[in-house]
Image (cartoon, rainbow, N blue to C red; front, side, top):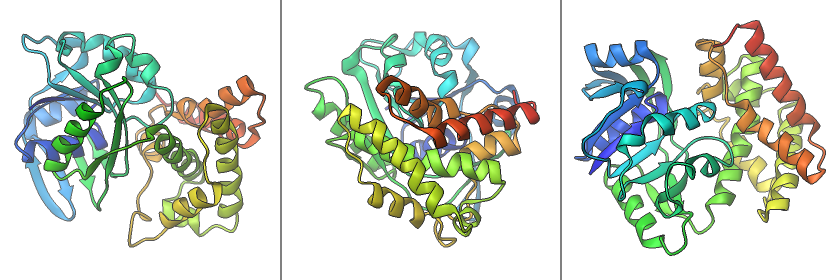
Amino acid sequence: MKIVIAGAGAMGSRFAIKLKRGGNDVTLIDGWPAHIEAIRTNGLQANLDGEEITESFPIYPQSEVTADTPADLIIVFTKAMQLDQMMQDIASLIGDQTRVLCLLNGIGHEDTIEKYVATDKIFLGNTLWTADLIGPGQVRLFGEGSVELQNIGEGKEAAAKELAEVLTASGLNASYSENIRYSIYRKACVNGTLNGLCSILDVNIAQFGNTATARQMVQTIVGEFAAVAAHESVELDVPEVVAHIEKTYDPAGIGLHYPSMYQDLINNHRKTEIDYINGAISRKGRKYNVPTPYCDFLTQLIHAKEDVLEAK
């Protein structure tokens, strides 16, 4: 299958390596010049569960994308605030048969993609794989993960299941979901707690979990997500979601991992996706008249940290 990874950061790199090793024709599209040059010169270098590997890929700046043959599948891994521009830039890769799978963190990305792709070709997903971007052209990949996905167009269940089979054949442990919006909200709770709080506190997941106030902060933030989700017919089980988040604290699992927002903001001084995670809950809270003080404040704190670090 001809697959394009739109956004070749840490997670995009993980999927690219898996899919190429699964026998697919994989092309990378990205907007970071140093990253593009490093991959072109040295290949994509990865520490894969302790093994140093290098994989070569064709990679192109998103501003220079042209294609004679559309992709069979585009997997979108940009940052949320870069999604609209990416979709504009890769228009030549989108044909009548091209399917787009969105695996971004956050909520509501299908509204942007629908401006460029027919609804029956759009698939929403949620992934529990992890990855670290060490520097241009270098990633660290460890642990196991999974993918859930679902069609948003009516009657496209078979197509969604086919995509899940393609990903699973490359070792990505994908499955079809009957309720992906629940899974997306549940994952957003993980990001809405660990990403922002680890970034502000300058800690990894295990260190955050060891703080005396971790449980109270997590319970409060998840409660705000659940109150907003209920207005969109998504019923989150708050105790279950809190327990799910607390399992990530284990150092033998992903506890030593620094969340993607930490990597962007603290390590690389790049702007974050906070407006599409906690900020999205704040906006929806105002829309539904639901108080979201923790999400409001955490969004403000992250933006303040961006200013302090002069994030770009």
